[in-house]
Image 1 (cartoon, chains in turn orange, cyan):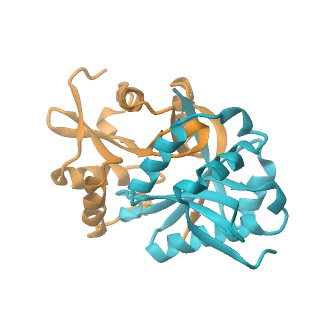
Image 2: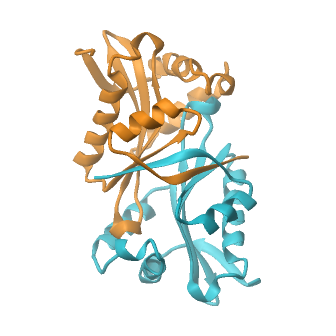
Image 3: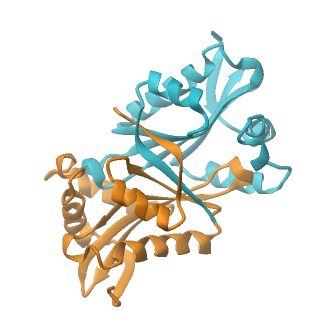
Length: 149
Length: 149
């Protein structure tokens, strides 16, 4: 279990390391590339107070990443929800509880902000990830439906 | 099939009708109430350029509603995704293709904006809704996981 993890907002300098984490993944590999679009996307995230791209920093290295989006809404009596996307842990840091700490950290941020719900979707092929989220209290009550354009 | 539907951003005056639609639902009924929190939530949505609370207006009546959130992200080569939440069609307007028109409209907005993906989650108990989204091209590839706080 790493003890010296810092959770912080990603900077522009972290973008290549984050993209490398997104690509270092059985499902994600075919979806990433060497494109300029990442810079524009990072600028969009950085400019938005409801979107937070987070890195788990261990000794200056980007060991993990996730994105947290706070979504306002009328339903459930005006509950703001926190959504977690793009969770990745670097290969050298897997199996040491870092993912667990990252999600617990994100849940803590949501709670501190007063969100009533945390939500995420996980590819059905990621059976280990789904069990992991269930162990953290998430329930797979919904179908996560996607339509690529 | 209604022919005179106008899709427009919700105004403050629409909030009670939208909340009534959210509550007029087998699953949603127990989650709504008569609380002031809706007004704060509406103000949050209205202030955010990435969140759009939409009403399907038929002759001045709120016949349906959905929320569209545009989420920037690095993954999938910096793809912005459109997320649909809180879809409801009023009881008097069901079975006439209005839901279909609402989702097609939302997909069109996402496409016009250049989003690479449209996503939503649907409660697994809503088997009709899931079939409906599949008929519009969505695939239930993910588990939609929720953690109430």
